[in-house]
Image (cartoon, helix red, strand yellow):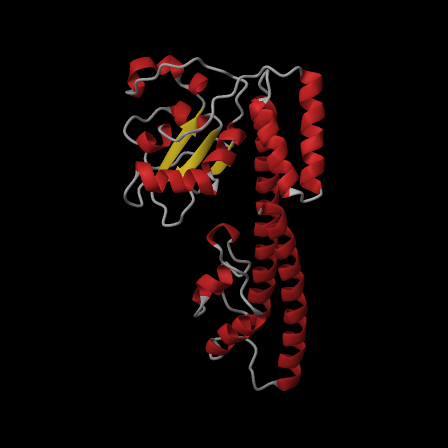
Length: 268
């Protein structure tokens, strides 16, 4: 957002980018619901959705509008480690992310030149490589498309759009699994997670692959419960009931971790 505020910034499909980030990547999310937000978030919309505002935008832009560009392509680029490193190394010497620095990110302009049949064929080939977890083959494939004559960078655009949508779906699965497990835990313990010592670890027990954070171990989970023993709806001295709960919790935790490791492998 930042300075001028127009309904098009909120009601158009957009990327939401926090104004501050402590990590080495730029966090961003894709919104199509028309949510309104305050100055703590930067709204990134496609130029054709705001170009009619003209001088009200207070920006100097000289570029052709290409409606074929997909915002998911921009999302994949912005949230990459490379772009994050570039931003915090050359564009911002602090934790701040602003519209000015976002506009300076080196995101490749795409020329859509590849015939539709070949473009679909090549995308299918890339998806096969992705399904086989062949990262080397996928990088070689992308390099070949970027150096092809005539250019086939639009195929890489399509691949990144596909990857971004996969990431969004996987993160939805991750959030759903976390909500399910924590909801079960709260119901059994009769205690809100936010009232527990160690709640930040519990809230993010699956970890964050982009920050290199691994899952909370089962020993850590037990330690958190022990530290909250005086708040729990189940007494640690009721051995039979406690043993039954621990067995159930261990089974559910292992299931969550297996899912997490599967998502992590596909995300990385």
